Image 1 (cartoon, one colour):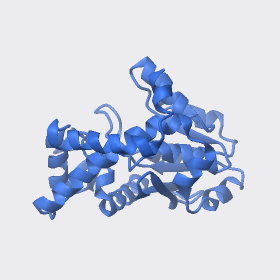
Image 2 (cartoon, rainbow, N blue to C red):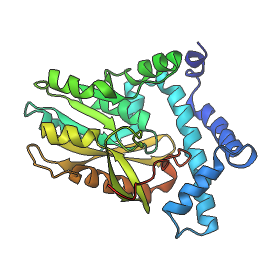
Image 3 (cartoon, rainbow, N blue to C red):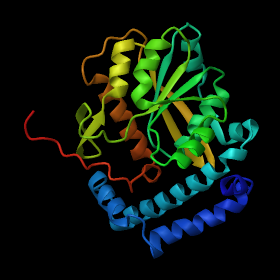
Image 4 (tube, rainbow, N blue to C red):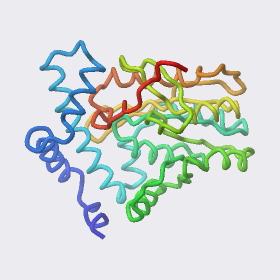
Length: 282
């Protein structure tokens, strides 16, 4: 009930509150400040103290803005969403789907990725199926599913995605996933140098791309102003392209890293991304 009430508050009133929250998390009651600082020092050793502090400040501001934007999502109309999330080149994906086959859309946790999904499902004009990891809390799971599917996206638990692709293999659609999270220790993974560190990447997106040979696109997301974003599709793999092991993940990781370097404050630095350590052998 309180989410429905708060979602009625316009963003113009939410943003000053978000700035206050960001200041608290940055200066008063630091939220994982040690994690943010350590991650940035490792990723950007060239940053001096003033530059790194500015990125940290902007990170907390952007994250707080995302929190209130997600809160507002229940009241967003398609017209307002279209004004706030602009898709620069939608025909790149539409033309592939028009050929009668699905496409893969692979994104990262950059800026407001929740609005990115809402923008894709409301503006592309094609079915959008999104893989996600279910939340442990039943209430939060129910609310987030409702929010993410507001404009027609069909949500598929990540562990069921491959089976769903096989079952729906003849249906033209966009299959979306976010793939920059760290895999758990039991999952198959591929190691790459990423942001100056040995980094494990989950192989789910690559395995789907290599098995299906669907056309695949990286979904680049850029914050251009407060509450305004641009989505751009970047080709990752062509339809029918044969990929060697690790090639798809390598292409994806380079695009994610490029996106982060262009706007370092918009990636979730407070997340403990590098808990896994690369084994010395094997």
